[in-house]
Length: 321
Ligand code: UDP
Ligand code: MG
Image (tube, rainbow, N blue to C red; front, side, top):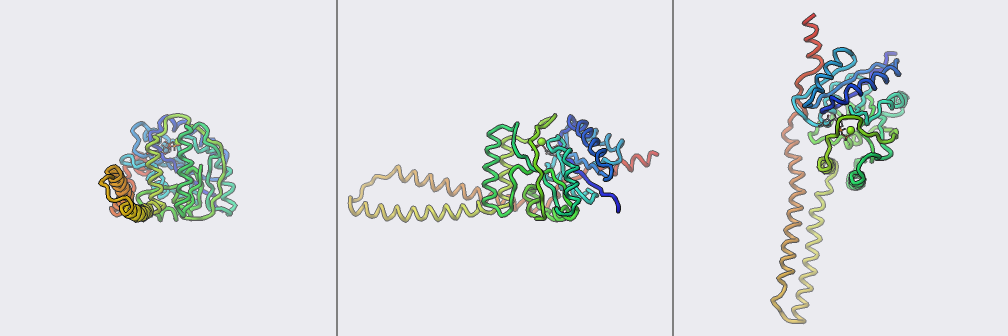
């Protein structure tokens, strides 16, 4: 039987500090698993620091290291997609460069997926130690909300770190949508996933690119990509206010009949006008959000643009020889 080849996709954005530490860690892991071949596929997502230089250096000294480099920063989701498209392994994993996805789990993940019982071995944080409490709170609320309004299950605490079969990756690749919310996509394609649990790790060096506001927008994108429930809110609010208006009409009619007509009510009028105006804008905003996503999808722009890959570098090296 031919040996298994595991491709590991590592999206990197400004990770110059992390890469040497990361490489040391993964070399140790590949030594622990001599029976499998590894392909370390670094995707440089338009880093502004020396990430590309370091990755190039690694690929020159280690034939198991490959790389793709984007023409600019396209985001982690695009980097993952590019990696999945170019990976050659029969098992494929995605892993962050900051060691928050512990490579030490790989042997266990590989052992499980090799049994053939599962199509995917995912990982899940059992806690959020080291994270600001307010961020954890909003994250929890987000998972509650999206699982309530979407048919696709989004597992709380699940990381993108997962080992998949070639069959599952091919399914993921068929989803070519522009607004990629990987947590949803991995779940949407189905297949049998088993989650391994581990304790949250803090980033070892460098810093996260996620601000609170960035995460908030990301969660909204996730909701828009995997649920149309917000669109229903508009009709719901519309119907509710219509019922209120009917009740108010009856109330005012009776009051006029009983107490006569008084020209008061300026305050209530202003409140109603402002309230209605606000609700209308809210509903328009929700519609606009879906419209803008549709707009981006219909353009069918590529998800990323490659500037350089290890193949270019290898060809260059060979021509020099
Ligand atoms: N990343 C990327 N493109 C980006 C932002 C991040 O490829 O635009 C990579 C980053 O290098 C890291 C992974 O995605 O390997 C996770 O990023 P980060 O640690 O900043 O996110 P967090 O762990 O805080 O969710
Ligand atoms: Mg991280």
